[in-house]
Image (cartoon, rainbow, N blue to C red):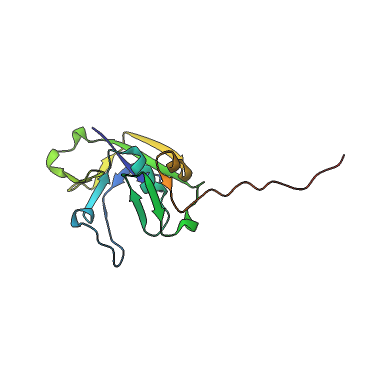
Length: 146
């Protein structure tokens, strides 16, 4: 089975990390593991990679995202989605966190099958960004006479 991991970082392999939560935000314990988090949803992985600093509310049912700090979203930022084939990972190391996430525990690092580079704005192919809109291009009012 192919799963995906999104990141702002350009990796050769994916290493486990310890997830954390923001003050005052309820987060299920299985989302705070020292693990490698993967998703079966390519768009969700891209959304994880593209999000700016701060809290991101991802509404998978309505395919929409709201950023705590929309002004920090950089549509031209290069982000990455990694494809991982989990067929070679022992089943006892794979924990289903929820419908969108799996955690690989007891493994420090996994190899990448494929890597896809995107601009952060590509997330709009999968989700509506509720509180961020691309600024219209400025039209020059300057005319040159020859």
